[in-house]
View 1 (cartoon, rainbow, N blue to C red):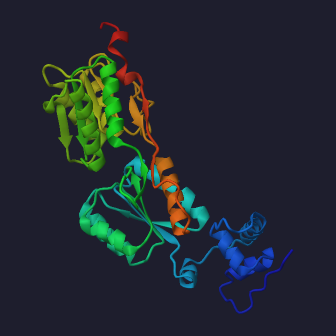
View 2 (spheres, rainbow, N blue to C red):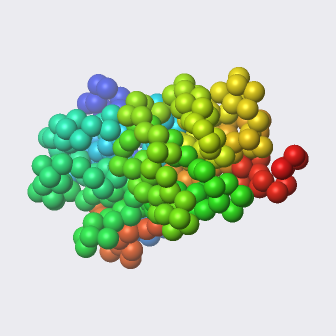
View 3 (cartoon, rainbow, N blue to C red):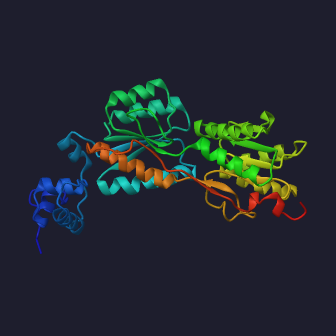
Length: 350
């Protein structure tokens, strides 16, 4: 066993030199190994990692930044923390960045482009090693800030086609088109679209809904219901009540998010409207609880955890100066057909 002497160090903090001595590996190699540098020989990296774990070594972010002129944190901008979608995304990011020696410095934009711009200005003062931003739409000033910073940046939740732009996501528009087509395939013809928040990705879903119904010759502008209020079960319930009062009655409602759809299912129960026999209900994002509702909710499962992981992996490559094979990654989506949209020909009394 190696005994570490801490003479002259009143704090008693385990240092990089301590780890180097305990592992028999040079200080610079230990530093590179703990940063996840793949150029370090696996055997040396393992010795360094085991020694750091045994000694309880915690990297000093300030010392690392001073020594390397680089920060050990990544700035990430997301719209909300109250939405499970972004919690899952953050979890994927953290699970990838932390083992590589980075921490996420989070900013919440509240779907406000001006607020995003101000948050980014503040975060850039700290010279983050990398940036993760949600979506592709933002102010020209924010785009210029990102470009001028020279800091590697990856966009989340959508896929970009611009050269030099890195992104991981899926097609919101195509996912909504697929859900609308599913409702048509189950025999529905008067399909309403209910949306709240009205952020860029919600509006892309609305366009996918229109694309599908216009192609089928069934699009009715009056059946689009848009509310700028934050998405919630309460808002979804109120929208269901409004839409259910339309005559002739709609036979399906496609909600832009699962919390709205969950509220719609509860409203149907209060009103005595049978789902899916009278009105089919569909959601988006496959949020917790959707599979357990009665009836279970048909929805689009989105790969938000995987998006966080893949985006963080690309960012790590960019921060290390490594080549990125694919700048824009489309992870796709999965349509989960459940009880709330069962085909009309399979329902009793139809």
